Length: 214
View (cartoon, rainbow, N blue to C red):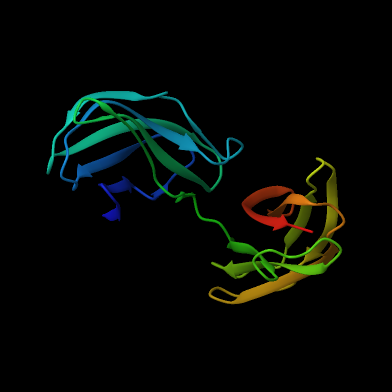
């Protein structure tokens, strides 16, 4: 189980077949305060791939050291990420909010996985700079029909197609990188999206955020 204090958590299984499936969220209170009146939700980071059918579960008490298992039903089409949120109270009075990082749920057997999209730049690039954005793909089986698309959403909301690139032949376990450059013409938050396609079927999606200052 993974820890994000004061909760130790696990989502299982992490590999499922496509269709309507059940996953279990296991929560343990490893803190020093009881948690009460909890609304526990499983949320999708990609509704195109995974949709959670059960909106939430109410937990009256998760005492110090107590563990609970909560079932959630999902509609699974493609591999995607989910995360857990909890809202309630500590010691019956203090408002409490907690959420997990994204957890990858693999749906079926894909030919490859989009490992990450990352900006190869300083943490806070300046207005007018040109940065490089890189997508990394890892092969799971031998393939030769994979395509990576990289898009940018500017702070003003304009969506830019930066590139569309074939990967050629990719062996199981092999990693390939594809990168593009973009000049940062606006101040604020840029959102970069990388998509992985097998012919016309989307099998991966990752997001990166870059904050641009003057």
